[in-house]
Length: 90
Image 1: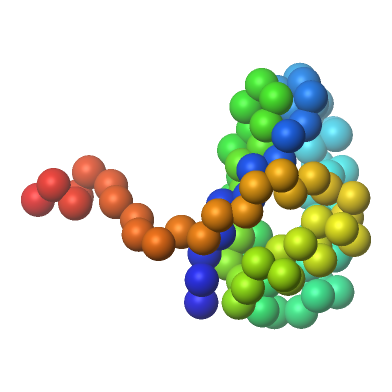
Image 2 (image 1 turned 30 degrees about the horizontal axis):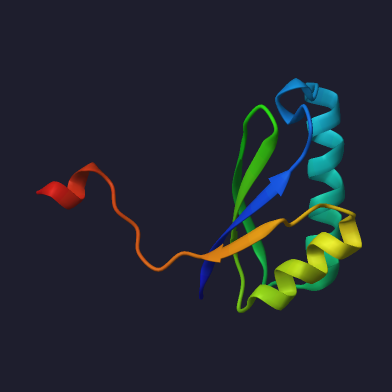
């Protein structure tokens, strides 16, 4: 199944509180449950003004549907074509 990185522009994302992040996560998970098992949220990285999310989904359209239903921005969606890490050098 394809893996994607979603770039979300969110002003002051790095200042979101633990409770705010929990609320956003709960909303996301409830929408994912409604959309079914074809889409999965793997993890997210919060920076000063952006959130980068890793998702597994059959297509970009399902990710867009999740974003629309949740009211989440999805400013850029990129399919991951390869993964490398330190073990790649071996």
